[in-house]
Image 1 (cartoon, rainbow, N blue to C red):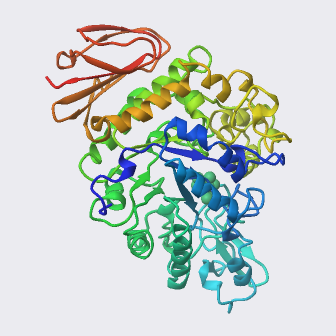
Image 2: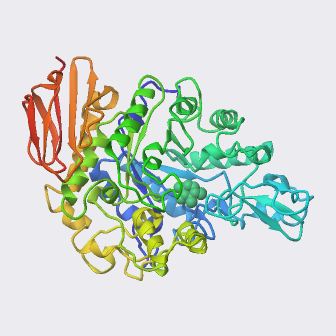
Length: 549
Ligand code: NOJ
C-alpha cells in the first residue's frame, strides 16, 4: 500500500482471537469482550501490536459469526458496543490495536436487507443479493457448488427465484455490482474506523467480484476496482492494516492487492502452503503426509515474489486450520521443540507474522471420537455428504481430527483447573483434555516454555531491521529434512537453520554459510560459530546473526 514507506505493521506481530473460545467472563460458556479485556496484559506481555478479532457482530451464529445480521451491533453473547469501545481504549493504552473482521462477501439470512429482499421482487433491497430464475427446464441456474457442500443456489419459494450463496444457505452472497450496497458497506466501515480500530481482516475478499452467470467466483473482473474504491472511500489515508483473505491468490495477483501503487490492501492471506498438503481429490478431508520440500518451495516462492513490492502475511494456523504443532510438528515426542522450531522458521521470514490464539503455548488438535463432539457447520455438512458418498464414519472422524476447523476452536487453555480456566460454566465446545499440562499458567512459570520463545521472537522483529527487510535466500531446497535460509540487509546476514524431523541429522553446510556471529534464537543450545558439518538434534532450530562474507 502506498501511504507510508515503513508502516507500523512491518515490524508488528498480530494475534488472532476467536472470541467465542478465548475467555468467558460471565459463565455462559461462550467467550466474550470483557473476557478479552481481562487478558490484555497477557497479550501486551507477549508483545503483539494488534489483535485481529474474528467476528463479534450480531449473528444467528450459523457459522460462528461469519453470518452477520447487524454490522453495527455486537452479538449479545460477546457483550455490548460499550464493551467494544472499552476494549479499543484498554488495548490502545497498552499499545495494541484492534482489527475487525469484515465479512461482506455475504450476510446472514437474518440481516434486515435479506429479510426485506425476500418480501418480493420489487423490494428496495432485492438487488443487494443475487437472484436468478431456474434454469430452462427447471432446477438450479448453474452448477456452482457451495464451499460447504451442495449447490451454491437455494430456491426461495414465495418469490420463485434462486439466491446465490457460496457458503451455507444461511449466508446469502451480497451483490457487489450494486453501487448502493457498496456505499452502505463503506459507510459501515467508516463508522467502525471512527471508533478507533486499527484495521480490517477481510473475509474471503477475493470472492466479492463474482460473476456467477459466467461461473466466476474468485478474482472476478471488477474485484480490484471495488477494492480501490473501498480504499479511497474508507481507510485510504488512515494509518491502518488491511489484510484480505484470498484463497485464490497467486504471487502475481498478490501484487495487485498489495503492490505499492495499487491503493488496495496492506497484504493478503494466501493459502498455497496450506493447500499443497491437501489431497488433490478429497481436499483436506483425506490427510496426507506433510512434505517439507513442497512446503519450502511454496514459502520460498512467495518470499521472492514479494521481495521488492507487496508484502507477505506469515501464518501457520487460524480458526479454519488445524493446530500448527499437530500439522507440522510432533506432539508426542517433541512437542516443545517442534513448536519452537516452527515459530522460529515462520517469524524470521519477511512479512507480518500472525499468531493464532493458543499457538504460543503449543495447543494441539483435539482428539474427538464422535461426530456429536463437533460443532462446526462445515464439518457437520461434510460429514453428512461424505457418509452419503460412502466414506466410513471412522475415516471421516480421522480426517476431521487431522484438518477439521474445530481443532482450532476448542477453548483457550489458561490454567490446569476445570475447563482450563476458560469459563466457570459449561464450555460451548469441549476443552482439549491436554489442558492439564498445556496451559498459559504453566507456560508463564517456565522460562524455557514455547510462550517465552514466541515472546522473544516478537521482540527480535522489533529490534532487528534485517528480520523486517532483509532479502531472503534459501539453501538445500531439495533436502527433505532441513529448512535453511538467510536474510540479508546491508552488511548483516541472518542465517536460519531448522531440522523439520524427529531424527537427528548431519548437515553439510555450504561454504558461504560458515559464519560466526550471535545466536539470537535457539531451542536447544546457541550456535555461534558454524563450520562445515553440524549435528542437529530432533526439531532443532536456531538463527545466527553475523556479518555478510
Ligand atoms: C472464511 C472464514 O475464515 C471462515 O471461518 C468462514 O466460514 C468463511 N470465510 C465464510 O465466511
